[in-house]
Amino acid sequence: MSFACTLPPRPLLAAALPVLLALLVLSPARAAPAAVTVTIHGYAFEPRTLVVAPGTRILWKNADDVPHNVVGLGSAAALRSPALDQDDSWETQLDAPGEIDYVCGLHPHMQGHISVRAAQ
Amino acid sequence: MSSSRSDRSASPAAPSIASGQPPSAGLTRRQALGCLFWAGTGALWAMHGGVPRWLGAIGDANAAEAKTDAGAFRFVQISDSHIGFNKAANPDPLLTLNLALDKVRALPERPALMLHTGDVTHLSKPAEFDTAAQLIGGLGLPTFYVPGEHDVIDEGAGRAWLDRYGKDTQGAGWYSFDDHGVHFVGLVNVLDFKPGGLGRLGAAQLAWLADDLKAVGDSTPVVVFAHIPLWTVYADWGWGTDDAAQALALLKRFGSVTVLNGHIHQTLQKVEGNVSFHTAYSTAYPQPAPGTAASPGPLVVPAEQLRHVLGVRSLQLTRTAPGAQLTDYPLA
Image 1 (cartoon, rainbow over the protein chains, first blue to last red):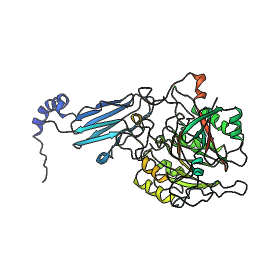
Image 2 (image 1 turned 45 degrees about the horizontal axis):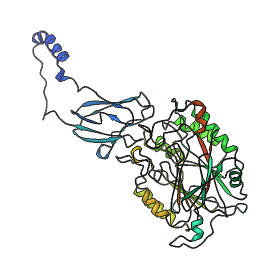
Image 3 (image 1 turned 90 degrees about the vertical axis):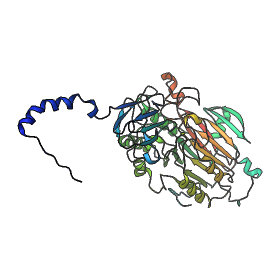
Image 4 (image 1 turned 120 degrees about the vertical axis):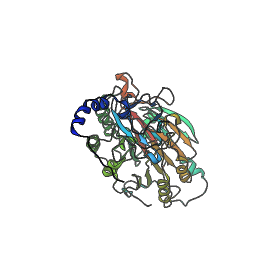
């Protein structure tokens, strides 16, 4: 399979350009999914469970006065943040659909779960 | 033994504790007496048959008697230095680590070695490791480490620890050595956690332990040290080790087993048959008693009380009292 790109005649392009730019700026459907924040507080991930669309950016922010991190389990082992001290944050984008279980690697009684699913 | 990080033979001046008796399936009266030990939190206790008997506060005559047994093999334990911590519970853990080391220097008899039961650093940063090594090295004692979970949160998930402390160790850093007839086993239970939160030794380490203990006689005193307690202190906070029972089954045949842990920043004791369990003071900050707070985070105490809840531990083994005798020294 190949992709070809053909441009319209130059006068037509000039006339259409403002409209195209406006569509790019105003169309929320074209933007990347908004970041979702997980707050780490009181030795817990809040919210503990998330359902997000593929491509969503997730940001973890540590509000505790002890360090925590994010460590994916099983097939999600690639999910691993650095140590997050108080007020540190870390962000990653989840592209592939699937179920992700994760814990804090320092306090594994802290558990979280993310379902990455395409919108129905 | 499949690994020996620092095999140190008993010297003529320091007689071996091990009696060399042949292995036997059950505990004899002599072996049961080997379970006699001392422990405490600024106090001395005798544990005999699992029943604690208070002998006096440190500084009492009984305590002094316990500490002056000539010819004893002495060593010390420190834990949870958390170099890099800088929050309200202790803005200066360097100062309190130095005070802890001064406590060791001030002991009536110089110990032969020191065990550090993990969380040397707070964030596994090279500068934190360097600072700790510099301070602890100033003591001039052979020091044996096991990692805490705070020591393996580098990008390599423990690579930094192995690069620094992994020489002559197995797997993620476990090892054994012998000194003065005592068999020491350093275990790693801060990696490969599962949901639910307890520490974990793992199949590879348990297999190594079984092999390591094959060559050790039943009457040899065994000292096991690891970061997270090998008994479940409080599961809701992850204060226990998921597969500890398998390790303890391997230790059941020994007449005297002393298990030393850190992690919970407070001294607690438990006796189970011939095995005595002891958690240690931190040198950095205290944590709440199990279940007494919403979370196990650093406990802020009035500044003038901080040194009363941090400390070091001295241990000794003698021919006359085959079990380990423990004394915990608060920094103030």
